[in-house]
Picture 1 (spheres, rainbow, N blue to C red):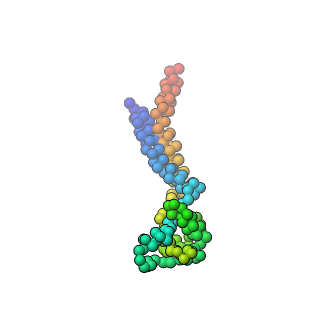
Picture 2 (spheres, rainbow, N blue to C red):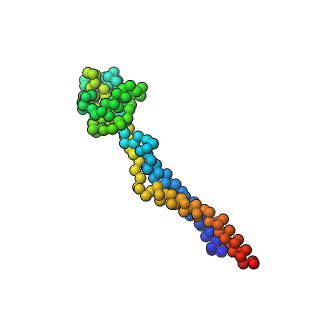
Picture 3 (cartoon, helix red, strand yellow):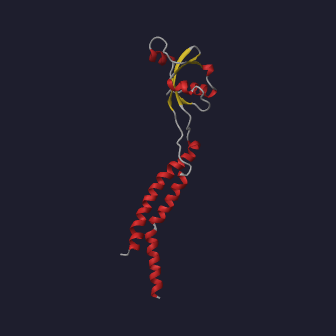
Length: 169
């Protein structure tokens, strides 16, 4: 067996399979990073709001030493999420929009609404996935190049067969 046939029969397909694997590893997350804002709600934190009874039970006794915010001081997005979380059976909702009190909410805060105390905290940040801009196109290129490597043995055999036919006549 010639060195050329070993190269096209074994080495090229092996390298091709490796390139396909690396390409998939790059193209999938790179592609997701491109479309994630259209299919998910990344960068919209989820808050949890407890009822006044749960808040009283949690802190059993005097008022806890937590920051306090009046409901009226919340942004429109924070108020919408607060009200949605209160109505939700899980007590959670996403903040879709401006979140100026985000740092305070992350550490836990008491929000007063209609004279009642509600403990509120961020339970999920929901960050966006970040990938380098060239990750997707390079991954696709690696997959295509890998497919060429995997298909090299049949292509090589066809070329050798054509050469043999040409030499016979």
